[in-house]
Amino acid sequence: MKHLVTVGADGSPESRAAAVWGAKEASLREVPLRLVHVIDWPISPAVPRLDCHTAGRWADEVLAAPLEDVRRRHPHLEVTTRHLSGRPAAALAVEAAGADLLVLGSRSLGSLLGFLVGTVGTATLVATETPVTLVRVAAVPEDAEPTRYGEMIVGVDIHEAPDKVLAFAFEAAARRSCALRAIHSGKLPRAYRSFPNVDPDNEREAGRSVAQMLDELLEPWRRKFPSVNVDQVALMGPAGPHLVQASADANLVVGRHLRRSPLGARLGPVTHAVLHHAAASVAVVAHG
Image (cartoon, rainbow, N blue to C red; front, side):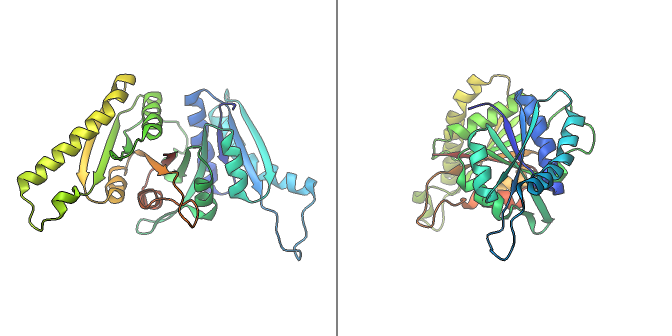
């Protein structure tokens, strides 16, 4: 597999923001960038197919604007473009399989409703094991690239083995020379929830136990990435709202279980919540 960052481009402002974000990420990783547009052929016989020449010209026009943005900001970055035909989610998933990271845009629905990932974005997320970053337009500077990065947030489930998630988060923080905050949020152990009036001392002891488990989980990664300043937070309650609130001004990394339901692969409730409500960009890393 050739190391590269792939960006899905569809001509929208969100995909142009994704291209700019992806170019910066490719520059940080010191790998090439590929801009991909998928031509979604109509399946109805009543709609005539475009000939290859016309379809290719349209795709080139879609890719022209993000390509110009990227080359203006990163003149020394190796950038290629590619257009495919087929169902966008399936085509993007195939492209993602040959990349280190897939980057897509996400449209804002306002402060109350959050963001729209869309059917293509959701279908692509569940169809690939490659990490996918959803980019918000507000997360991309208009002109100058940032010289310093703020904090990164990673959601951690201490009851799983989130090595891929932690590796992605620590590597990203190390590349950006920024701090990393690891957040675990969950319910009290079942033994404590069985009683209606839990002794506050017992509740605090449970919290200390969870914090210790989180600390032990992070310790090998602290040793592996000594340059990364790591803060850890253990909270009680639903993880989604805590991560959304914490990531107001920070990029967020969350995991996605590869387990499949009888209805097919799906996003978990925490991943779904942060994708649709976190204000910053969200990286989703498949694991398990």
